Image (cartoon, rainbow, N blue to C red):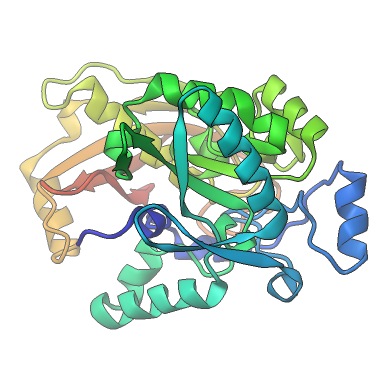
Length: 344
């Protein structure tokens, strides 16, 4: 089922057992933003991700504007973020780079409708595994903006097309901090942010100095706020006669994205288990357990990670170092890898 990028950005496999990790308090180093929140405004440094919910009363305090983009879609965005975006857009035009807004704010109610639709069509279990939990999307804030490119007068809106323009995105990224924006989902940080690299997804934080500091450090928003350690993950793709290195890279990204649900855990290493795991028996079991998904391929990876003192997951030991923990993935002909299980 083909869906707009603004919805696709939300569609990720989730672990329903980890829903209890939501709502942690993040560190806030921005005094002006704190004061704004105290005075009845929004906190521009608020962290909203897979384990941090949208703050209470946010939607009542939010002030937005509606605009029509070049393809005729209505886009709602927080007012100050939009004003800053217009300045960024004008600056980019000097470099003959033209951008527009693909999406910005999505209400919690709208996300709930998506969840309800999937539940009605495919069942509660499938919906829980494929739709981001309402209240945990950064797009709820109105401060997260998805850009698209206009190349030679043509709208370039599909992710697979936009990703090719690496030089253009590099120029855009260099200018973001000057207007209070940061690049939100960095390459290689999927285990922290829970999302793959998205050069088009930017976040407004209403403070140029802080935006520059985050950008210069090359850290994620989570790391800057003290909500993640930023530990690098060792990756070993091994060798495979069944899958290309790009296939295995895509699988690792999915594993890292899913691991972001484990609040406070640290992922140390991920390695391909080898072709020996890929048997006809395993594939048939996966197909039997997931009849609607039409999987045609499976893969097994091994992980090393450390749990926090309170896991929230009954089958995992607290404050423990796991080695060679099995992760099973599968994919169909028309869709990418999906993490099916962690552990046997």
